[in-house]
Length: 168
Image 1: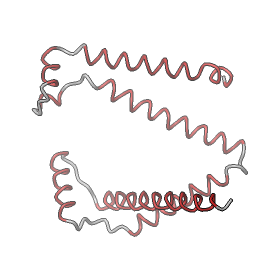
Image 2: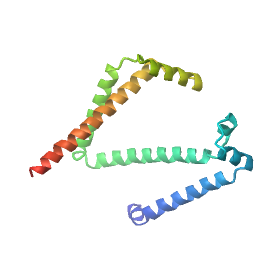
Image 3: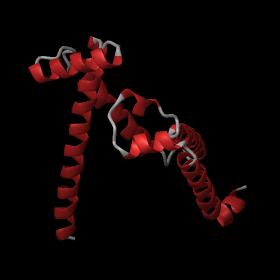
Image 4: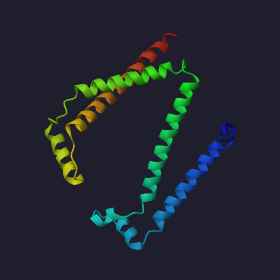
C-alpha cells in the first residue's frame, strides 16, 4: 500500500479533487433559473438562503476534513507506537499546549463585561435561537488567550533563533 501511494498518491489525490470539483460545479450550474437569478441578484431575502445547491460542497468539505483528522490521528498513533523515544518532544509539546489551555480556561471568568460583546451575544442568541452559557464563554476566552500566547511564543522563537543564527 505504501509503495502504491508513494507512486500514485499525488495523482490520485489530484484526480479525486478534480472529480469533486466537477460534481460540485455541476450541482451549482444545474440549478433552476429562478434560483440562479436570485443568487446572482445578491438578494438578501430568506428565499436566497433556502437554496440547497451548495449542500454537496459543504457536506464533502465536512467529510474530507473529518477524514483528514481521522487519518492524521491514526498515523500519529502509529508513528508514536513505532518510535516512542522519538515522539517524546511531540508529546511534551502537546502536554505543554494542554497545560496552557487549562490554565487559560481556569483563569477565564465566564462572564461578558464589554457591552459590545454582550450585544453581540444577544444578537447571536436571538438569531440562532440558542444560548451561550458561562462554560462556552470560558472556553472561548481560554482559547483566545491560548492562541495569543502561542502566537507570542512563535514570534519569540523566531526572534531568538534569528539572533542565534547571526552568531553561528
